[in-house]
Image (cartoon, rainbow, N blue to C red; front, side, top):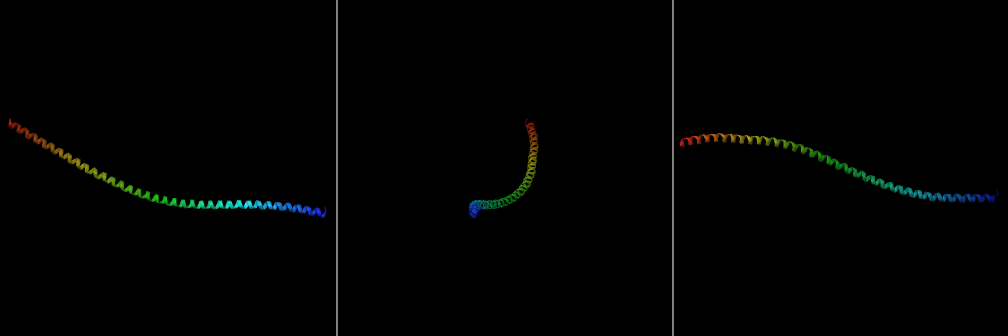
Length: 128
């Protein structure tokens, strides 16, 4: 192999290497672009996750408020149950007293009726 052939071979190889390096640079530029897009997407995902985290914090706060409100409602309901029981008991006693009064009035009317009937009988017997 002559010097010229050697130089031509080297020149060819250098040309091939230059071409390969150029293609690699193009590919790397594409990879860099893809990586930039991935980074942007990851930043968006991070932002979305931060928003979800914030929203979950708000939901937790709202849930705690609902639990507090539910506890208050349960307490109020227990108080209402106690009051209703007391009212039913008081009304039951009052109704019993009222019925006893009606019963006494009915008995009194029966006695008065008997007495009036006796007096009527006596009057009728004396009038005849």
